[in-house]
Length: 633
Ligand code: COA
Ligand code: AMP
Image (cartoon, rainbow, N blue to C red; front, side):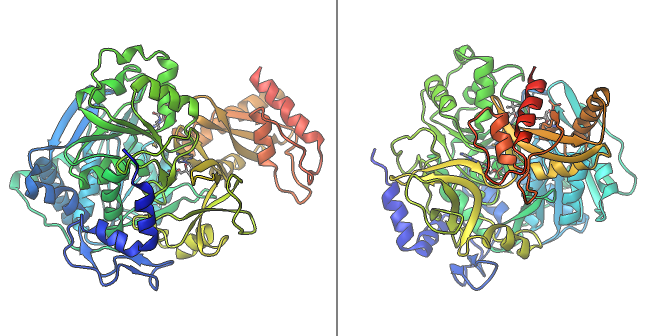
């Protein structure tokens, strides 16, 4: 099939508003918009101002009314606990409605924030949808973050209520959530009025009198009473959720997602980009705490009338490297979306994919990879193993959907390994030099997007228009700065090479090295430090801390290193995967005092590097190499 991509993309270029109006016809609105795009409102303009709608209505109710009441909407598969459960659209509506009634009893209404700190259980999805139903704004916090990170999000979002669970399950250990939640609430200035706690059989917890409530009890009561909560009309421009993501400091950025544009963009993506028809099963093996989980476990598949899979497990070890194939076969998954690191893990454990043999994957059509650069080696292995197209696509928490990819529904383009495809409609992607001039095809530079951003991308940061402008819009006027470095080739394919800020990608998880430096610097023995991301064959990158300690002997150094590792785990969370500390005499700097992180990274990754002209003392780079050599041996 010839691809319709070029025709569709140029259609969008010629008439961007007309393009999105057509896409918006796929959504049920309560009342129409006053303008398609209003450049005068918001930081750079707003999509569909004046329109009213409800995301939960479009994701659930309209399918119940439209003939999908008995179709599975959500399949929960938890190899880690051995539990499986399926919910039809009708059942999801009942669960969500009952939970919405509980939230209303707590006084939660339109515009109020609700923090959701949950493991991968169906109730996490119900919680998101229940908030959407009553017009409350959810903010899901990933379970791998520690109390301090949770507290920072509670303080910024000031939630009226928190929905959480007694525990999460990681291979070999039960993660008690309640002590983390209690500590986070203790640390935060903003105190929620109520916490709704899901008691899991694996580890129950005590409830704090006057504040905590039992999820099953309260929801069960409303379910039994048949309480009905209608979908609250909200403005298309009202926030649906806030999702915090790593910024260039320890303070996370509250990415805001609106209701109207988000639905339009995600619904359009399901067929055109992912090639999925309503009624099919789509599986995003991510976590609801990440943007991929928001968009492609919850909202997009449900808006499209698909069955979505909620997987509580890992690609390996739960119980083995065949679990992905089992889930695909058992739930008749048409497309899987995951991070390349998951496939690197499977390949390492089962290089010849012997565990694939018992499973019938005949209904499986496409594998989508994102979250980090997909190395061609892994892509080719997945292609050979599965015999289906493997699509690398590039996006960010901020955009909520792919910026570039090979659009399967529009017809595939020739594959270029190492490239996450071509810009999607809505995205005029350009590459600029540091002075803001466009660079020729094939030249590396700053990847930027010409404003306005399309529907579904962030309109601003929560309560912080100024930070939004400063972080994304000021450096290249008229453009959104992606903070990714890369290039466009002569055929318009993008290549994304590295971040231009302090963000690193660890096993597809986005983390700020600046945030880790803030923690490490707090240790009294640390005089100076730098945390950089170094190459890792499984996780893509892992953090490595370089520390200059106040006069310590070798034995003390070992103790401090262990303490630093524990501090980062305790303050940021296990997800930071901070396990390597290198003690050095001095840090390499420019004459103006800037730490030469990029050169340190090249040395650590054993890449070729050249002596920076501005270096203060070249001998320090040799010292770094020697210190790394000692930790390797
Ligand atoms: N709650 C509590 N702890 C969590 C957690 C959660 N939700 N998620 C991860 N952690 C912990 C892990 O248990 C691990 O702890 P440990 O240091 O005690 O072993 C630590 O955080 C690091 O986790 P992770 O980076 O996920 O490594 P892993 O060794 O557990 O698994 C992979 C490695 C590759 C199997 C795993 O990262 C994976 O499946 N990645 C897929 C990527 C993905 O989902 N990306 C989302 C964007 S698409
Ligand atoms: P997140 O906000 O967690 O989705 O992380 C976004 C960042 O991950 C991007 O800015 C990129 O640096 C990186 N990223 C995501 N997808 C890709 C991809 N397909 N190729 C290269 N880098 C990617």
